Each structure stands twice: as C-alpha cells, then as structure tokens.
Image (cartoon, rainbow, N blue to C red; front, side, top):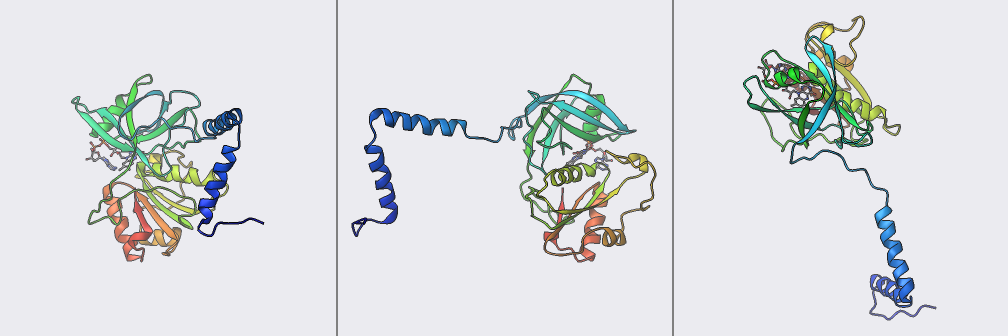
Length: 282
Ligand SMILES: Cc1cc2nc3c(=O)[nH]c(=O)nc-3n(C[C@H](O)[C@H](O)[C@H](O)COP(=O)(O)OP(=O)(O)OC[C@H]3O[C@@H](n4cnc5c(N)ncnc54)[C@H](O)[C@@H]3O)c2cc1C
C-alpha cells in the first residue's frame, strides 16, 4: 500500500514520482531518454508552413493566364516548390500590389479560388473594369512576371451604416447548419472557395444555397451555364425567400458583390427578418 505524506498534494506527488524515475537512470540511460524525447519533438507531424506573410509582400510568378470572359481572366501563380502550400485559411483573402496606368502603386484585396489542398500554386479570378486601377495591372500582366502578395488579409472589425457586419470570416466546420450565398460578378470567388472547402471535407455536412447574379449569362465566371433557365432581373426578396435558408440562429447569409447590390441585399435581408448575426459581407 502507498503511504502518502499527508501534506503532499496529488500533482506534487506526480512531479516527485517522475523526478525519482529520472534519478534512478544511469547517465547513459538519461542521455538516451533525452535524445528520444528530442527525436519525438523534432519528428512530430506538423502542418506544412504556408508561403504567405501577413506583414510583407512576397512575389509569386504568373505561370498561366486564361481569359474566361470578355473582361475576366484566371491567373495561376507558382509557389516556390511543387509541394508548397499557400497557407490561406478558407474564407480569407490576400492583398495584391500593382501599378495603375500612371505607374502609381495600387493595392487591392482578392480571394483565391484555390485551397491549401492545391499544392504548388494558387489561382485568382479577376474581373477587369475599364477604368479600374488594379484592373489595368492585371490586364497588362504577362506570364513570367511576378505579383507581390501578402496575407492573409484580415479586417480589423469595423462597421458601416449600410452593412450589417464587416469583419473576419474564418470558417470552422459546423459554424452554421446552412449557408445562403448571394454573389454578384467577381463576388463569386469567396463563395467558390468556401464551397470547395466544404465539399472537399467528407465530415462537413453544411448545406449551401447560392444565388449568383451577373449582367449577362456570358459574364458568369468559373462555370458559365450553356443555357440559362434561371431568374432574370435584380436579386429580389422573393428570390432570397425561395432559395436561401429561412432566418434561424444556426444559418448564415453570405454576400459579396458590387456596392449597389450589397446595399440592396442588406435591405432585403433585414426586411425578411435576418438579423446581423445571420449575415456576413465579404
Ligand atoms: C474581400 C474582397 C475580395 C475580393 N476578391 C476579388 C476577386 O477574387 N476577384 C475580383 O475580380 N475582385 C475581387 N475583389 C474586388 C477587388 O478588390 C477590386 O476592387 C477590383 O478588382 C477593382 O479594382 P480596381 O483597382 O481595378 O478598380 P478601382 O480603380 O478601385 O475602381 C474603378 C471603377 O471600377 C468599377 N468597380 C470597381 N470595383 C467594382 C466592383 N466590385 N463592382 C462593380 N464595379 C466596380 C467602378 O466603376 C469603379 O469606379 C475583392 C474585394 C474584396 C473587398
């Protein structure tokens, strides 16, 4: 039977027992023990480090530029090694630096359509506006050139009167039972990234519904439909009611589009009873 001194607490006893065990080892055994512990520490499986730096721009080489529509292209950038991972959590974005028509520096946020399961590269889908400053940079960019990128870009929490929430979207499995997604034009990129993240995880059972609006069918990015039998006109309250999960504490409506559309969607969602916790704008 173990005789415990009355004033020795259990945790002190554990430390004492471990210490006694080490004292009984010879120097050689002790050395072996230390080496084994170090080996376990050094060889422990670790998540590979990503290539991104949130503070400093790093340059990535454009290896493929594919025109998708009359004003949008897909850009593939190589990572340092074919096995490298980018290191951007699902739902977050990067910032890219370029030069406008006048040679002035311009910095804009973009959401890659790739995930960390895509080794050795990352891809952006960029819609280019006629007078857009960064659009000019992407329009002129040629394969073999380098793009300075830093990230993940995270907003400090801030609020605008017309927006419900502007903040950080860091996806965790099970954070919502269902997502309703409302995207316009290039606003499809965060939805695409999140959808891929959910579909590629067999343990993730989150439901998703997407309303994707474009000026014309030919402006649809990523997978333009061959024929169109969806709705026509601006995204309405009725479309949201028909296609998105009803207001509930375990659903979220994600939206990303041009400013006018975002404002209109915020008004529709509020009228339909979605409170601020049920909405997120990328
Ligand atoms: C979190 C986040 C992620 C983003 N991800 C992507 C992405 O993956 N792909 C992508 O293409 N863009 C994305 N954007 C938009 C991107 O950051 C730029 O705003 C866009 O590329 C235009 O930049 P610009 O410098 O060319 O235009 P600017 O010089 O800033 O604007 C010039 C003119 O272009 C038009 N314009 C600019 N932006 C829009 C817009 N969103 N809708 C309608 N008209 C507009 C307006 O007429 C504007 O007056 C994202 C934005 C955010 C906030």
